[in-house]
View 1 (tube, rainbow, N blue to C red):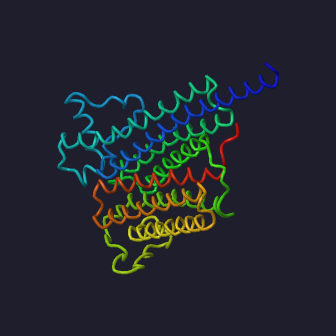
View 2: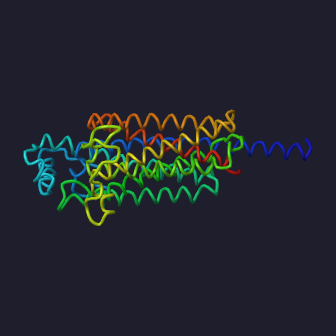
View 3: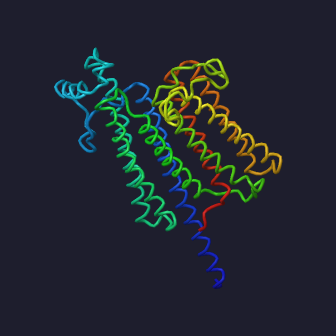
Length: 358
């Protein structure tokens, strides 16, 4: 066997090894992505059922074990009875009713803790066995660090509702959900970077930039949605396309200074969230039309069509959730749809950069 043949054989084996390792890492990141999706949905259910303040202490290790005996349940319930939410809203709640909201919050925290193991243990294994390429190592470590920081942000959010408020601060809720979405988006980006890419050129010179703008707008729209949720702003003005009988309702800037309305006036916050949806719809439409006109046969153009379709479905779910006055099932579908749009938008954007170098 000639030296050239041996070199080619070794190169082929190295390529096969890299491809095999990348498939394994992608599958792991895909499972992490799914777990994050479930976590966000359970977090949404926790918020919608008013369960987020049912556990008033942060016990990262001991908190994995829930109450078992009647005495332990009574002790946990007594802690809840000290906070304003119980005093002002749930004064007539029994221990059995308390268990319902407790299990939602406990499940949310358990899944959050589990993600740490789902991410850290395989990361260590893939790293030590040489399955993770050097250029991927620190981005993955950064993702793990952001996940740890998110745990702190979650408790920081909960503490805002333990002393003077009957619910958590909308500011902290928005920060918590936005960071969760950044972790979700980062995971999707890294997963897509390891996947095979089309060699098609971008349909237009602005396609890549517009795809990035859409992805960023999707995250911003989720942030706006978190403010809506934190203020319970979706429970009022349940008509569409008019809001309070007008395209642009009055009373949007009653509070002073004017900018505080963007964060604390439920009417203004809901209106801005609606505008954000229209902007995202328009961006996805322009991106799709320009891509299909310029190069309809490319993978990028076909993905732009799928992205626009997902945005349309998400808009329809949002409208139905609003006009039906936020039933929990539709509200969770809307939150889940937002993550699907975000994940696809991130993968679509990453697709313009080509496969990661070997």
